[in-house]
Length: 246
Image (cartoon, rainbow, N blue to C red; front, side):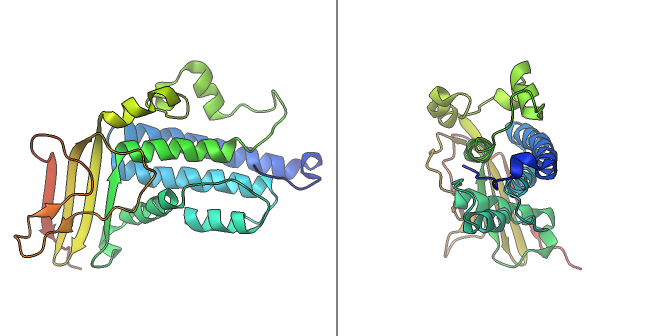
C-alpha cells in the first residue's frame, strides 16, 4: 500500500497531481485493453507501458516523490520501491517485458539478436493485476473522484470488463484455456523474423521471459521453435524479410 507523507491530505498540490496522472493512466489502460482484446499485441503492449508508467507516476505524486522523466516502467518501479514509501508489489518480469516491447516502436534501432515473445492473454491478465495492485493503495475521500475507470465500471464498459481476471477471478481458468494471439520477433541479420499465431491453453504462470522465434540449429532458416503452444492448422502469419538498409 502507498503511504503518503503525514501532511499530504492537507496539501492540495500532491492530490491534484495524482488525480491528473490517474486520469491519464486510466485512458491509456482502456486503450491498451482495446488493442490487446483485438489481438494487436505489440501495439497493446506499447500503450500498456505508457499506462503503467502513468500509474507509477501517480504513485510518485501521491507519495510526494520527485517524478523522473522516464518511460522505463521497471526502473520507475524499482525507484519507488527503494524509496521505502511504497509496499506495492508488481511482477518485475511483466514490467521488463513491457519495457522491452516499448522498443519495438523503432525496429530499425534494435540490435542483432533482439528477440521477444508476447501472448495476448498473459499480457492482458498481468496488466489488469498490475493496475489493480497500484490503484488499490490510493485512498481518496468518497465522492471526490470521477476517474475514467469508475465511469467505465458503472457503465459496464466492455473495454474494461471483457476477459478481466481481476473483475472476474472465477473465470480466469476459462480465459486462459481459450485461444489467444501470440507474437514473436527476432532480428537475425540480415533477416528480420516475425511470427504470429493462435495459442490454446497458455499457462497462467506469471512468467514473461520466454525467448522469441528461436532458430533451430542445423536446419533451414524457416524452421523456428515457438515460445507458446500452437493450435491445429497453419501459423496465421510469418514473415522473413531483409533487414532495412539505411
